[in-house]
Length: 302
Ligand SMILES: Nc1ncnc2c1ncn2[C@@H]1O[C@H](COP(=O)(O)OP(=O)(O)OP(=O)(O)O)[C@@H](O)[C@H]1O
Image 1 (tube, helix red, strand yellow):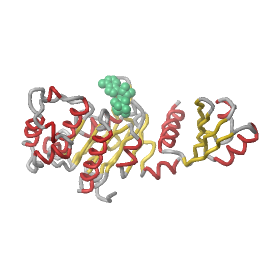
Image 2 (tube, helix red, strand yellow):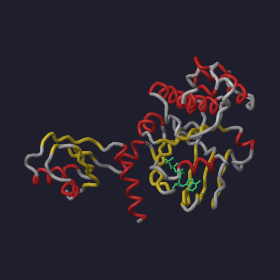
Image 3 (cartoon, protein in one colour):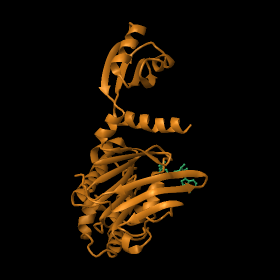
Image 4 (cartoon, protein in one colour):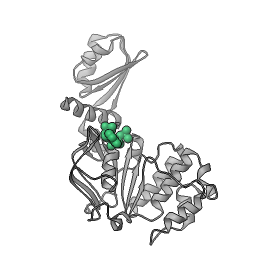
């Protein structure tokens, strides 16, 4: 449920250079309680860097980061946060239960170990040693470590990469429940279905800047358009030349056209190819909306 409460963590006009790349460019973002915020963007957009600054792992070159009103490097602020990064080393020799018990010991109000095991889908693996876990099972253990302390802020960097469909759905349920219980959740993801299923709010970034911020429906509407599919003999450049076309691709005999005005595009398409068949028009998907948004940024920057 979206909240009007003040942000528990925020970046204010943060810029951060990583090597030669300006990974964050004057970026401001607040994460609110009771809300799942999804950070979406293409590879290299700056998502992990934003998480790094928010969690105190990276220092901003300019601007400020704030975690529960404190510097994110302060242990007292970090104690209220659960984090699952893209990679983490887990103890090889401890069992899953022992690793969770060790981490839970740092928190005053940790969940019961059996509850954490169940929430992360690890009940049957409780006695397996860390070194014997598969990739997906290790991800589940990292998730367990992020949630075991009942954090007020849960940060998940691409949490479901490598998880099977059942584990992914289980994680979504726990993440949703965590936000419904009042915690703030920030997750980065490449999976649009994940943002659609989970997020109250989607923040799209490209080249270190925010290019859209709203619900998934708002983001789709902000690039209002339609996807046209049909069988046509027209080559890609001819499709791109039709009125209002933002992008076009062909696969086999089928063309897929993203248009800002489906009627104008289809009218011209039928004029140019009378043999066009199997014509279907759908509302643009979130994926189409995102590529339009991030493409636009790249073009404006060029
Ligand atoms: N340690 C580093 N040294 C040099 N450049 C870096 C470093 N870390 C990140 N970068 C660059 O900073 C930019 C932002 O990277 P970041 O990892 O934040 O992107 P991302 O949105 O998380 O990408 P992905 O979706 O691929 O995980 C990229 O161009 C990346 O190459």
